[in-house]
Image (cartoon, rainbow, N blue to C red; front, side):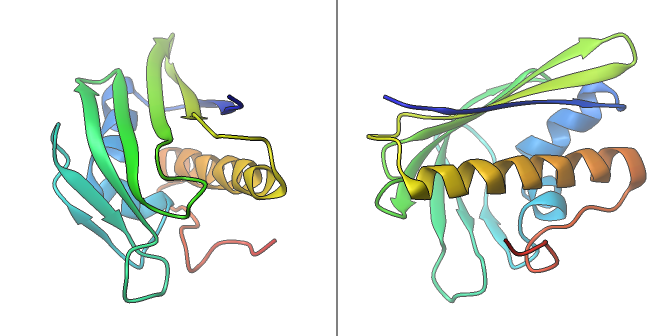
Length: 145
């Protein structure tokens, strides 16, 4: 199965990066200002809103390892997303944090997968900006492409 993978280095401590990817407040600062609802604990779900009354994606929180790993499984959303997994693996490298992102388990490589790969890269750079400057570009303030 094809996967989306990205690597981003941020000038921020590991603990701050983890909070950004592990908490609804952190996620809202870089991915979607329209809403992140739910609780970030293993077995709970997070709902992500992008301008519609229904969530665009619902992710089950499958793993939280303090400061090093966030794992989700998509249980509702775009047909191509359901059954896929998303993970953020974080490691400290000197004064920087390395973020290894993966959206895995796609059934096939497709134009939509390519679109999602570009969007994930964009939003990971939004997260980098939050950590380094305090300001990201989450939906609806994102660059449309």
